[in-house]
Length: 166
Image 1 (cartoon, rainbow, N blue to C red):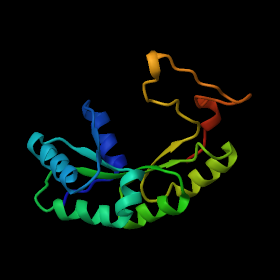
Image 2: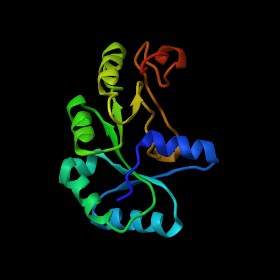
Image 3: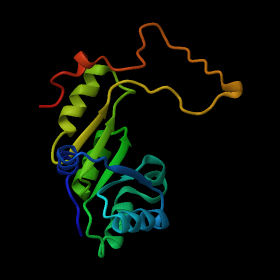
Image 4: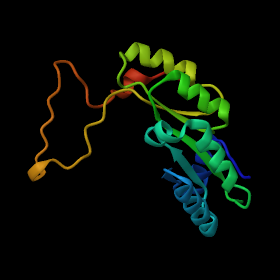
């Protein structure tokens, strides 16, 4: 097995001027295809486990399935928990051996999001979402109408996140 921390993967890519592919796995077939393609291309990757598949398969069974296909893989692989909306799930992923986690606290008040994000930032690379993203589905006639409540944000102000994680 060739698991690498998300931080190590990103630092190496930055230093050597290449991008890292991040691919979402949904079942055994996609896990195998992603890993075999990475091996064939000799390309380090992030293999993302998202909320939809976790709701059907479970977090640990997905990690175990990835482990089962890693035996002949020599390229660096980072397993990434994508868009976890709970602290408990984020920490369970770290305990299960995920090398990168994304805590999406955009549904929480900003201060609570920051508090939970800081608590989750232990042991794995942490990606955090602080504000809501706009919908990505194509609306009818290619016209998108978004209604925001007074005072809502659609983007995080960079200064507001300074010092969130040490």
